[in-house]
Image 1 (cartoon, rainbow, N blue to C red):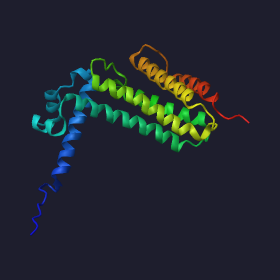
Image 2: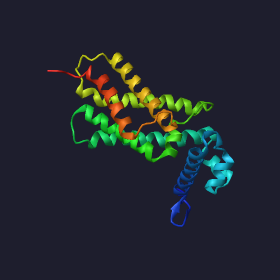
Image 3: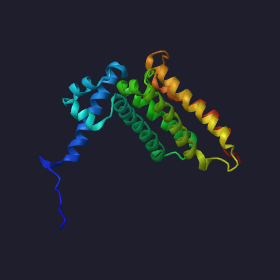
Image 4: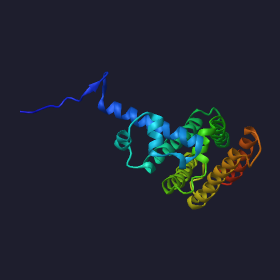
Length: 212
């Protein structure tokens, strides 16, 4: 005889849904604190207080603070990846350079409009090994994304190692430029940043494009 356990619900929501909601509240609280004060200010007690949840619910979702920091970072990274993919898939101009410009503009304009999120993605993460690791992985993620997307535009005999090195230079340089811009080290408006990055990207890409 089989015994079936029915999931307990409160207010029409299952335990799984309620846990997911608590996780979202903790991530939102961590994101707010990080955006306002930097990653080092994100503590378990501070996040719980901001989210109005007890420590029990923190450890229900995260093993420690690093796990929360990674989740906050990952949310920001996923949003940027989504912006780039959307820019590529909705661009009206089929030209690769035009589509790269659209992706660059999407990121620059988003970070300009969301300075708090820019602080999370571009801020000084030195001292957090977990976040530094994710930052390095993110640079590889964008490198892979750009190489995969550009593939159909490039000759079949393109040197993949050389292409990867060039793309990494472009992605890393873009990240450093926008970081400096966000910090005020570079004083330029968003259009000038977009124009300059597009020019540099064009010079890197055109050497690989097929010319007939």
